[in-house]
Length: 168
Image (cartoon, rainbow, N blue to C red; front, side):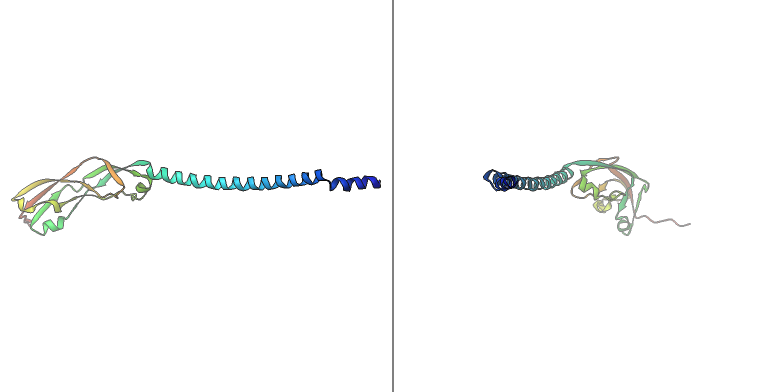
């Protein structure tokens, strides 16, 4: 029995056993290195996926339709203060479609954007009595958004010079 114990200790410390232990340690180190490499690759893949998603969102365009938006006429009070009367259909509604990137469209309020006609472009000195003017509709849009479709381009406005309201 003592010979077997001696053989056990001799085998435990022989060159082949030491090489097997070193190989096992190297194998464990290789596995740890492989795990670190896999973790780094996974993190890098997630970062790349995030950048691809951001790029796709910033380049992709979508259309957003708005219906029955009321048209306002601006600077009516300024024109009327000069002795003119401004008349127009206050019930005019316009449908329009906006096109832009997902990020840009997400900045548009849910109610839509302001659609209006501006009387500041009208030359009042040309009006002698009554004049019907077609004013272009203006849609205030952020820089990255375009209007691809409008149900109408103009609104008719009647301007009457020297208008005096009749009282009964």
